[in-house]
Amino acid sequence: MDYLNIKHLNFGYLKDSFVLKDLSFFISDYGVYILLGRNGSGKTTLMKILIKYLPYHKGSVKINGTELSSISLHDLSKNVAFLESEIPMISLKVREVISWGFYPYGNGGNVKSVAEILHLDNLLCKDFNSLSTGEKKRVLLARIFAQNSKIVLIDEPFNFLDPYYQTEIALILKKLAENRVVLISTHNLDAAQFVGKKIFLLDNGRIIAEKTGENLFSDDLIINIFGVDEQLKPHFKRFFRIKRC
Image 1 (tube, one colour):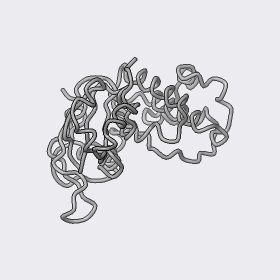
Image 2 (image 1 turned 90 degrees about the vertical axis):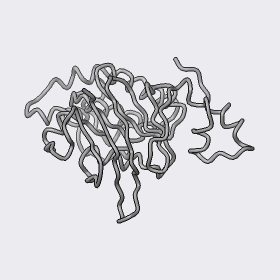
Image 3 (image 1 turned 90 degrees about the horizontal axis):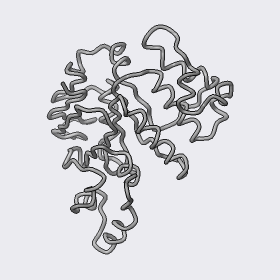
Image 4 (image 1 turned 45 degrees about the vertical axis):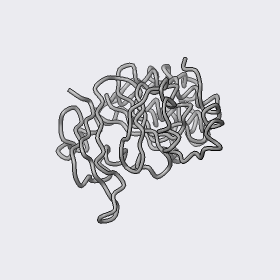
């Protein structure tokens, strides 16, 4: 059974103007999966559909074999965790933010054990709003660990992070994906190559190809998606090609 199976999905904010067009893909194994595309390609829209923030018009979206439209929000919160791209202002201690992850199960959990996984022990009593951007991202990811959902959706996890924290967050995502499906949206090519088990190329509302980090530049699809002209193409390839660890 697939953890996530999307077939012929269509969605538009306006009548007769679709953002997602006959979009189809599936995920059947644990790992980090990437929705890669330029801004406005439909990545965030798809994430919002998967958490039932937006209703889909046509097609099928199945979570663990069940059509999304028939899953209650409470049950969805047990199966799917979501982390948005913007970091909210939260006037709580770090310990309390992490504890939100246990909410779908109706009882408390061991916040300290979750904090230890992401080396947050020394921050538990600090105010969330006083932390750096990288620290806040780690705390919010700790909440995801606490929620223990088998499907994790993360929108643009590398935004506004320096190289140190980008690397740290990438390693956390790999650890998170040891026993979960982690689907992230990004236009960060370095991160996609480093963490992606499979990379779905999203262009103009459609999945046009599936890649891996090793073959991301095997043809000109990624070049075309980002609108790179002939003069810039060789420099673009050299700039973004990295060796996977």
